Image 1 (cartoon, rainbow, N blue to C red):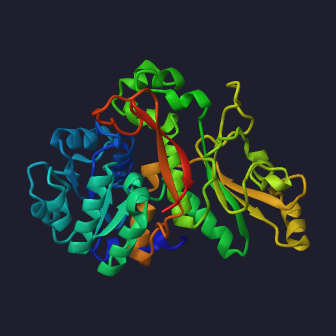
Image 2 (tube, helix red, strand yellow; image 1 turned 120 degrees about the vertical axis):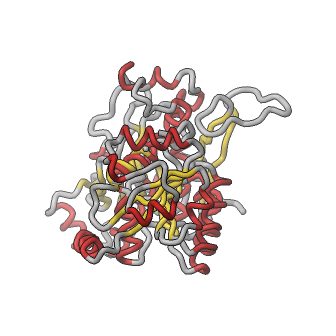
Amino acid sequence: MTDLTSKLAHLEASGRPIQVGLIGAGKFGSMYAQKFLDHDTLTQYTTTNSISQAHRTAGVRLAAIADLSRDRALAALKRTGFPPDKYDVNLTLAEGLKAGKAAITTDSAALIAQPGIDVILEVTGSPAAGIKHVLLCCEHKKHIVMVNVEADVLAGPLLVRRAREAGIIYSMAYGDQPALIAEMVDWASAAGFDVVCAGKGTKHLPEYHYSTPDTVWDHYGFSVEQLKSGDFNKQMFNSFLDGTKSALEMSAVANGCELKAPREGLKFPPCGTHDLPQVLKPRSEGGLLDEKGMVETVSCLEVDGRAVVGDLRWGVYVVIEAPGPYQKECFAQYGMKTDASGRYAAQYKPYHLIGLELGISVASIMCRGEPTGQCKTFAADTVATAKRDLAVGEKLDGEGGFMRTARSCLPKTR
């Protein structure tokens, strides 16, 4: 990806910047749009990230934002420091494109249909909305970056096929962990290594499976001032804590990298970066995996609540295997973290910046014609269990809620 900057600079110099449409004004999108927003839905943490970076990137323009609340979209623009001269809430979509200013609409279908927009960022977090938006993008020939991992896990391979048939690109969102993991898996495979395990870190204890929006802040270290900032949706944050988001993301990774899910679901083993190749190798060789080629999420907490040394709470990793004695020697010579045998080694990135990195997906699609990861097959699914007894006729309240948690990423059976 070393040439994206020059390609974007060329687009800027030639007066043909990439025009981006954003659906969902939550934190992920807002982080991009500083580079280019806050949402009361589960996407709150996502969209504001995207907005924050958009205006800082040559060759890219935030053309418009679609959100059910115009006020919410405007508040996100202001909070992320988006230049006031770069948006106008009174302009139509067409007028905004002509003036080079971001417009705001409540009609996502109109945004997708608008001529002149090149790429759509789907950040709603709703599977139904996400699938609808992909099909509209296919109809109107708009590339789409799918931040919506929920829709991706539900129907990703089918949506990829529809997009390919329509001549558009459907992509995972760079900066979110599934795309970063897919990048590491691709690096390993392209370099000739077998992938033993790939995944991410998180904060996890077994009791967190029963956390609700009423208890979530007890488990986070946010100050009162931080919580008052408006960037914290308690149900969305609880989906990170109760295991739902990890199950969804590991299903997306399995489907996107053709890896296997654990037969009994994610184990969330406590594991620091120095122990990745020791813990995440086959059980037959002293590790925890059912077999090679799996996904797993590691916890930054020991089972008694103590912090793991060298934790990977915010990061991603891949464990690879030396195919022979020579490669094993090279692992040692170049300082790779290995297991005791020296045969298994780990590479990791200690962070992910969600929407702040989303521009890589936009640039990759438009400058290279390549996605930053996409689902290839149905290898894994996400399975939910109840947090409490459910009454007949009750409506489930969604991920991170009071009623159920997606505790497991399991092998696909259909």
